[in-house]
Length: 320
Image 1 (cartoon, rainbow, N blue to C red):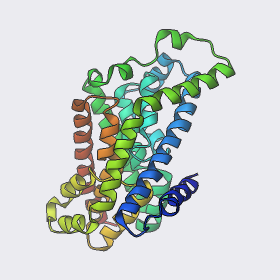
Image 2: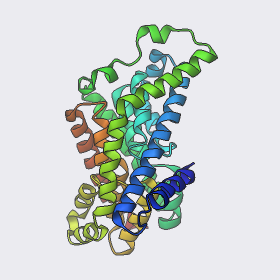
Image 3: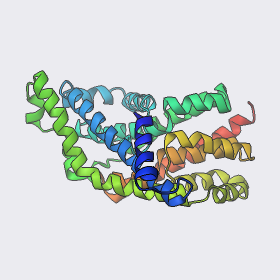
């Protein structure tokens, strides 16, 4: 499906509009169109599926299962995020569905953080480019970040910063309703339509910002800054990676280029993690679900966790 959407966006931009494939504007428009189509497709399919599945998962039972045993719920959510192949923006629909299902906020953050950092595509590429030991250390650190950061956010009682309709979750009448197969399918469809109507504008704005950054911010500038900062390269790399935006397929190649040009491994991977887990388009889309205070807390804590992991991976690299 990804290849089909890529081909469709190429056809529209380069054949129908007649734009130059080598021009920045054409590339930015193609990036915007391709990611917009991909995200809306994922929105429709994933929210429908989650809504359909939710009819079998009563709110209280789901909350009890994912909250059981202290960090257990956060670890399960982080592990679930690790096996879902989404970027930071594409994981937001499932984050919204988990919130509406009544899953605790800290647990949903464990999913939201881990999902873009770890997925099958990135793991396969990393094994080929960096080797198995580095990949295992990376995956372990991603699960650790997702579990601990989500748990800490859950202890901070930040539910009040959610938008009202997101905080309410499923009402009692909905939770008690006895579904048939037909009503389950209709519920999933209704859920997909409702959520898309709520966030479509934020998706378009977010991808538009990402397309601009992706095609107009020179990679050489980022590389030169990181190379000149020595001990502070990890926080600099993380800070530079946060506002960046790109598909998961583009993240590992960028990290490989930086590593091959002399950037320390942990520094390159910190940039990759920040670019995968946090982005300006993601913040714009999250504004639909939460207030700015909570977005700031989430981004700040995640940034600190990535910086810590970058230093840890630099230390590990010395023994590999």
